[in-house]
Length: 264
Image (cartoon, rainbow, N blue to C red; front, side):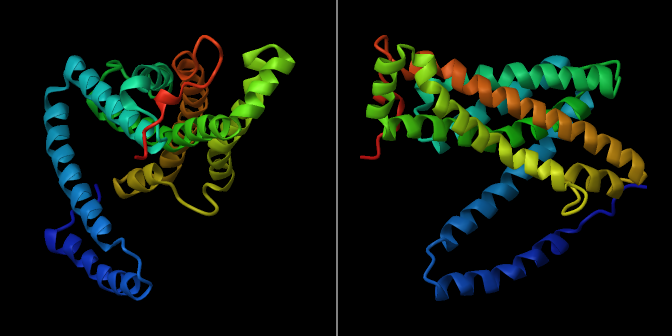
């Protein structure tokens, strides 16, 4: 037995809670009501479109269509990451794209082949939802990693250049910045894994239980997906910095200011 369907009026009823939210925002003079409305409308439209399109994908279950849709998801994720990191999309799109594609593809195919053990590794109902969870969780980590790494060097550029002259190696000079950015990116995920099940019941587990799965099966899937998310975040964050170094610095090991989005 699956989860009970939700009527349109049931969903609309949740909007009632926006009334006190808007009131509090106005009292606190927070100019975010318009942004909130825009975000909610976009979420509803986008999810509705995805719902219709996923039905099409699940029906035809074409490996080519499924892979193409996954690549589109990665491309959109890359743009979101770079804009949120204050970095130019055109300059760093390819490095970040492959930093996401390589770990996500390896972990996703391994998950389908060795964990779930399905015959068609590109089956839509596994490839798209699992791939979406991997990519969605990578966004935060890579944004923190890239933003901390490049903003830190930009802020302390003189210290960085002095370190190069002292150590004689760009890699050695970059190591403290890389360490700080990587720890900042991956620590929230480690903390989340340490408290999962005690502080929160994660989405995949809850969804499976609502869908009719027994709790122990849902827990097994949740453990598998959490490990997969962690591995994808870990390697994607590392690769996003490493792959971007060639573009991020010139031949003299000086930070390339052209990678940043101008605030003018």
